[in-house]
Amino acid sequence: MSATRVFVARLAGCGVFDPVGDRVGKVIDVLVAYRSGGAPRTTGMLIEITGRRRVFVPISRVTAIAPGQVITNGLIDLRRFTQRGQEVRVIAEMLGRKVTLKDGSGSATIEDLAIEQNERKDWVVNDLFVRRPKTSSSPFSKGQTLFVEWNQVNEDKDSAESQSAEQLIATYSDMLPADLASALLDLPEERMIEVAEELDDERLADVLEELPEEEQIEIVQDLDDERAAEVLDLMQPDDAADLMQHLPEGRAEAILELMDEDEAEDLRRLMQFDVLTAGGLMTTEPVICSAEATVAEAMALIRRKEVAPALAAAVFVTLPPHETPTGRYLGIVHFQRLLRYPPHERLGTILDTDVEPVGPDTHISKIHRTLANYNLVALPVVDRENHLIGVVTVDDVLDHLLPDDWRTEDEGGI
Image (tube, rainbow, N blue to C red; front, top):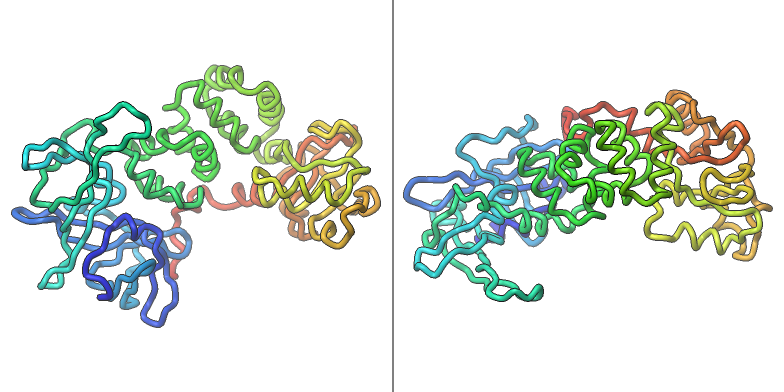
């Protein structure tokens, strides 16, 4: 092995490679099994391979652990991972757990733990990196940290606060929203909700957009109305509207009353349409400009951090007003076209008028054919008076074309 002592939290997200150096997946978690009279022994790793499928790799098949990577012998069982009764997931279940120090000095919280290879080539839990409770009320104060050996602590498994979500969130801090959503789906339901509720509003909004409908509803139902309104306010309008339509009518209306007035109006408009139509799929926040706006002004708008990549691919040109529902739709200017013209060029002179907009009642089957036929990533949606009311993007269509369990279904191989 390249390393004989490894801290588990640092393995999260590390690439997993076969003997010839081809990447086969990434580490999601490490599993250990408790033993009587000794520290827990590592049984293997939970890794994610192609298709976001989780599989188990026995520790005996791991040949090297180096900074940022894990090397296997190439033998990977493609059967879906099933956790056995005696196994515990370190990142999902042990980090954040309370322990009592045997020296009588009090309690602490596990922030990380080291696994070490012993003389028998077994990987066992050795040192714990723990943090004592804060001794000051200052928000900048943190408890003392220390390293202790496994045999120097007792786990408080029965404590109601035995598994804080804070450390788990810290471990997931660098994950993209889609990856974090997948990680949450791997947790037990109660743990998933606990961790989701501890995320800040913006992070939770991003994650909810990536979760299946059932899990979205479970999480939002556990939020109070005020926080639910804040989180839904930060979601893409089409995703928020889809979620709101699956909440009880009274709860949905209570949340809408607490939201920003303009955002609530957008959601009410979207909720009028069937989910599988352009009106139900569209977002009401595309990049919109006047015909007199310059290429430089349009580029500045699509550079904004909050603009989703699919929406940044094109600028939609209308008569005033320039917020949905806008004035009459005039045409579209694709990002690549913007790059070909000088900054002072007016958008009205470089319009693409060949892209036919669709009406809000257009079915998804026609939308995905149009996107595919003309190689588009966004399609304008107009009302009967040709006012732009929204835009359907390719990612919105894909979410509905894929099977409901696409996040977890088997792909049949690497």
